Image (cartoon, rainbow, N blue to C red; front, side, top):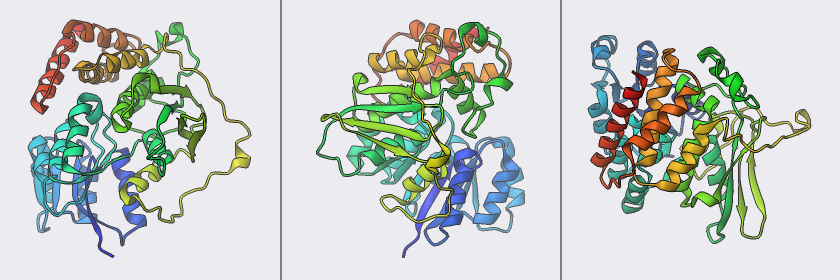
Length: 384
């Protein structure tokens, strides 16, 4: 069997490291051709030594020499920055690009990979939040596959298998509710980043963990789902499910609902995207129904957790509004992690940024990049 050449963008993060665990579980299936990382240089070097990729891309120029020195003598090309990412994803040998970069920085390499005929395993939800219409148009134009890695979108994708002729009435994206589920605004006024970083079910990076606590992560997933599955706003609902066992559901026009279940283990959706359409046997832990006597479901509190409502509104307004929402959110999450803004203050800045910029209609990748940059500039003015 021919091995699949893969590029892992963001290999030192939570998704990237688990993707390499999947590679380890199926050594006859994959060749790791590209590894990319940010500030965790020691881990990136260790990964490169172990997997011997063709390319390593370092996000920041100041770390390039350290990586080159440690990889000297190995047949590995070391590149840096956004230009390096864009270059490596176009390598003709690569068949699948797993994009696990955090934030809108994942947009351009995704577009370039699609235009080079690569299938995409997408964990970088911002790609579709920022420029969903553009990206899915490129997917159709170039005849590649967009394979979702987020557990919720993977669940929807799996529920739709064999249902091509059956229209979707509604999808239900499940949300754990994060560490502040059930809390009111009075409680949230004083929460710290340390509290927000304690997710009850999932082990993730800092940015996505804060997004989960604020429900912005679910808002971004709502927008991503619209583009992945060609849905309207009224076809998407969110339900809080604290156990994180049902990863999401699809309701068809006859009222029947299909759900995808499993333990909260990201290796499962990662493996499905990497090996699709095969389901390969593994030794991951299995779900035991006897250990879960009850599965709970609740409506999300969108008055307290305003980010989710802001995301629905941005999706309905369309144009550059989801792009602005995402950019402003990236700015405020960074500020929150630096103790420069309160937890509830993040929503205020996002709303002000959306209102200040207004709605525009970007059509090219450059248009979206400019909208992203402008939104960041405006959001910063509300922090000062």
